Image (tube, rainbow, N blue to C red; front, side, top):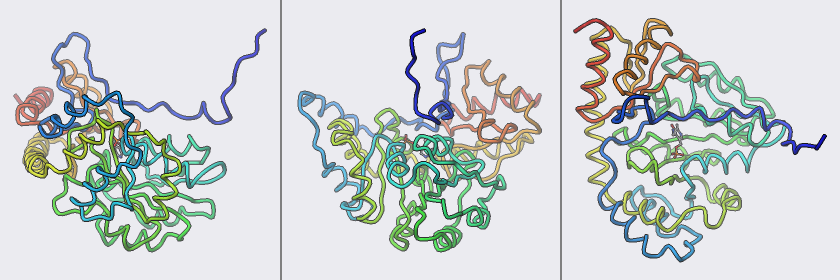
Length: 361
Ligand code: PMP
């Protein structure tokens, strides 16, 4: 019998990332509220930059991301030399595990944390250590108690996905201060822009040399399809991560579009305001129908049902109407559905279907 090529040990233990579907059988016009995408699209200025850059597709892109880093630095008041850009923030997270963890090392994530964290840990042969958490608050003491001499990285999204909760600054400080200096704390700020007057973790990075902040253009900027994210850390850490980056990881189209997007603060502000307004509307409507829903700091809400069966049945009712939301069973929350905050008509449509499901109208 012919020999087959076998992957390295551990590769087949890596779970495949489950991404939200974008179609429902029998529906041509689905309402997709499963991937925390921006219902208002993206900035017109970003679109114009995208089209403009298409003229130079024959050219290789620049390798140092200079203009994009300068724009991000200007807008956020950060040193551009302490920034790194990647293919989505996912790629920056990947550089982090590649650089700082390997076989035999441990990477701490929380029970309801973003599903990519354990996948990334396993990609480099490290062991994901999952710390239990209350659904509503991250337990800093539990994270600190889980640290061993093998711990290399701690992943924490703030605001968190899929719970929408936030760890307050004092608690983040306590976590950063309590970790050994040899452990890197990743402050994942994918949803930071939805929080008013929030630096996304930048001050924490400045105060602790072992903290890195990651951010994305996929959420408030409405550029999930563009695939651009970035990280902010000490010069030393950025130097390390840059060595793992492919020189041409971002195209000129990606960079120019992201640059125009980050400079369009009016668009970001409008999206933040609309999101906050409809997020509260959605939450109130759910609570009034007897569906559990805590305050969210992001662009989604977590609707908590009586039990997993009710969550499943409600999901089926939404799907029958062509609405895709995110069941979060794989995040350890089988009784909940994560619903992206859409625009007004999307929110009203979701609530109409859930109300009918609940027999309220
Ligand atoms: N972190 C968190 C918490 C997320 O929810 C996501 C997107 N689902 C990401 C990182 C990655 O986003 P991207 O790669 O699109 O920047």
